[in-house]
Each structure stands twice: as structure tokens, then as C-alpha cells.
Image (cartoon, rainbow, N blue to C red; front, side, top):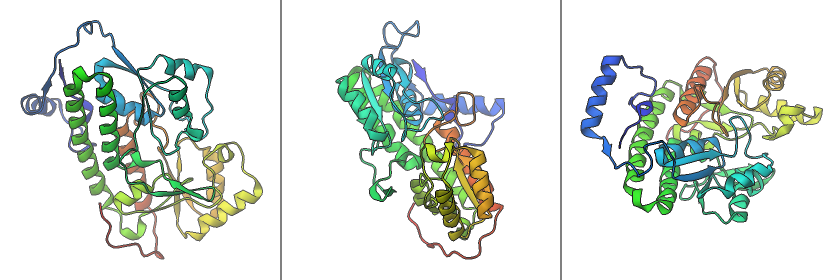
Length: 337
């Protein structure tokens, strides 16, 4: 079986090739990097031999890329659902009971460790994607914990891919070479994505690289690309912001936003936009865009996969911050990437 991923084809993630250029690149790819693996017996009819259950949409996307036709990949969360506040349903236990392996983000992104508990109760092997990632600190209601949003840096996404690959190989060692090849190719595309993001954010002066979002999910992105990242004090990641916020906490959020002296803030796609617009108006700032963080977009959207999600975020961040002006902050001049 010959496989390659046209979705990841361009070195520049936003470049749109003509049909002629695509054919030329395809010939070069086949000649230089195509990987030939034997089709598994019984797969001619599209049958999938193994089943993985993933906690989040981004973890599921990575797993589908590595598992290919040999794996059926199910995701507990639907696009737009919050892993921090998700409440398990009986159907989730039934889903895991049929799995060969479970895959989670880890570092308590899955609130109250719901994926860990599902796997443990069903006696299923569990891959934790953040294994090996250098953690950044995260203030969760006054307690310092590991920030679980590591996938928002493509450098860490490559670690996720390697961990998932090792998990699939343990279940299906006969096809380890295929999984390694898929992972190698995917990581190559992550490097291209990383390079493109570096190029795009370089258009933003350092004094403008201030990323304020409704909860501090973008630390890894900020650390990788030279931003200052923060969340306003009092702004919750849970249902409070989306379903209603007390006057006292609202006043605290507004005061916190003003303290950063920024002209624009960002929210996440799962947040109630009307509530955010009202708070932004009270704080005298604009909402520069809605970013994808804990979940990718629905199927058919520009953010239906990891690459689309990251491209969309970068477009909104660069566009939003280039259009505003900051005069008061001095950011570090050197940052490791």
C-alpha cells in the first residue's frame, strides 16, 4: 500500500498550488519519500483491524494520521466540547470497552482524570501524550500545576505523535515500520508548520506580541514564538463564562484586562461571544478573534485538523495584533525557539 498525505503537502501551509504544480510535487514525493507497505490481509474491503479511543479532538487527529487504514479512531469529545468540564456518559464506558487502546492528553486536561479512569476501569492500555514534554507551570485556582495545553506548540505536537506511535506499535508490532514511517513524515510537516509560524509572527513587532485570552491556554505557543501570554484574573475556563458571570467576578475580569493596558484580547471558539464582547467593551478593548485551543473545529471547517487549527489561529493572532498599537510594554529581546 502506498500512502502520502496531500493535506500536508506544501512546505508553506497556506500556499495553494496549481494542478500542474501538485502533479510535479506528487511525482517528486513518490520518487523521494513515498513509503511502500504491504496491505494487511482482509483490508481490501476497508475493514479496520484495531480500535483506539481518544480523549480530545487533537489527540484523535494525530492518531488517525499515524494509524491510517489499520485503525478505527473514536473520540470521546465532540468538536467544541471542553475537556476540563466534560461529564462522562454511559456510552463513553461502552466505547472504551471495545477499544484496543486509549489515548489521552494528560496533566489533568481531562478534568478529574476522566480518561485515565475510563481506561483503568476497562483495563485498557493508556497512552499519555504529554510524556516527555517539558512542562510549563499553570495556575489553577491558586494551585500551581503542569499546563496541559502543550500541543499548541508544533514542537510538542511532535512528541505527542511519537508517544502515540509507540502505543500503536505495542498493539500492532507487525506493522511498526508503517507507523514509524507515517510518524516521520508527519513530524517533517510539523517542522514546516513551525517554520511558517515563525515567519508569520516575525511580522509582529515584539512590543505587540501580547496574547491575552480567556484562560491561559497559549503559554506553549507564546513561549515558542516570543509572545507574552496571560489570562485576566477571575476569568473561568468552565461554564461560568459561557452561562453567566457574577457582577463581582465580571468587575474583576474587566479590571484585570485594563491592567494589561492592551488594545485587543482573544477568546476561544467555545466561549459565549456575546458575554466576551460585553466584557471587552467594558474594559475598553476589542475582541481580535476567537482561537481554537482545547478543541479543533467541526468536520468540514478550516480547523477540522491540527494543521488547519494552527493556521487559523496564527492568521487571527497576526491579523489581530498587527492592527492594534501598544506603547507601554518592553518584552524580552531574546527567546529560545
